[in-house]
Length: 369
Image 1 (tube, one colour):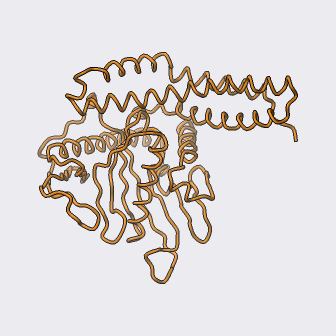
Image 2 (cartoon, rainbow, N blue to C red):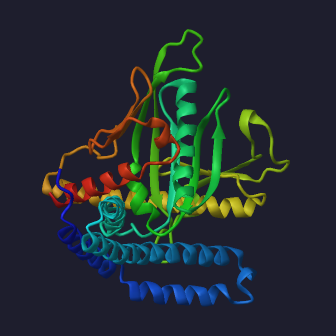
Image 3 (cartoon, rainbow, N blue to C red):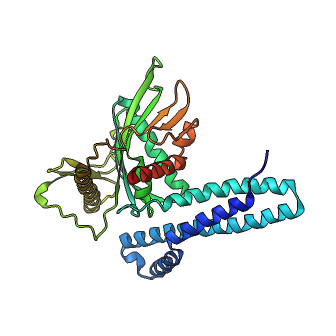
């Protein structure tokens, strides 16, 4: 069996990487990193903790982004040298090593290429993710908890900071709902393809008769609101409730009414925050979440008008988007892209990049149609 055409493969990868470098504008990225580094070195940085966290988080994310691109460029250069050595010495072992590194490099550059497809209005922003248990009783609550762990693990794999704002625990197991932030550039554009209904099929660990159970959970992803966004909410459109924070099983974790729940009366949207001990801080965070949801709602209404004008009657791409089957066979399958794997445990451990990348490519193809 003939090996790869190294010369052609290296030229293709070089061309792809050059396109990625141009889109990401490495000179501009380096300049932003320098400016953020200067801000991070300021002696009074932590006088404003919110701004300090924003600066340090953005600096870490931007530096990681630059490192990912420059490291692939270095690997490509090193691979070219390795291939030249293998061919000069006609060394089979070196050629096998080069083939392995070529496959790994191709995969890494393809993943980088996906980032260049994120060009939506809010794609570059951080993300707010809300998970809600759907039909399926205690199994659905447990499934929602599994999904939350999956996304947190995914973020950890990429060294993205996360912050849980609100968790509503179910009585027996799992969660009714949870909202958390993924604090990294392009988190919204990346995770927005995860939005929709997820389905789990398994032998229920909560059924003493060992029957198969199908349960559902919903994922909502919205971009974090920035100061430049025009989202004004009149006070008379809000109902604000305060209550005590609680942990699993209803156990109190706070002795004061610091948790805040805000209901937007015109839309019925409800948000909550209980991660801070200060009621004022929880209220500010909850308002930020509400504004983010209203921003997306406004965008959806505008898109609906455009779709109506052009006769687009297709259903939402996010509905019924992925199935996780643990019995009678093992498989996770995306119903939109046909991406699948026979290793559900790896997926629940946060290995979802293949699904995300396939979703981003699928969305771009669909929007271009």
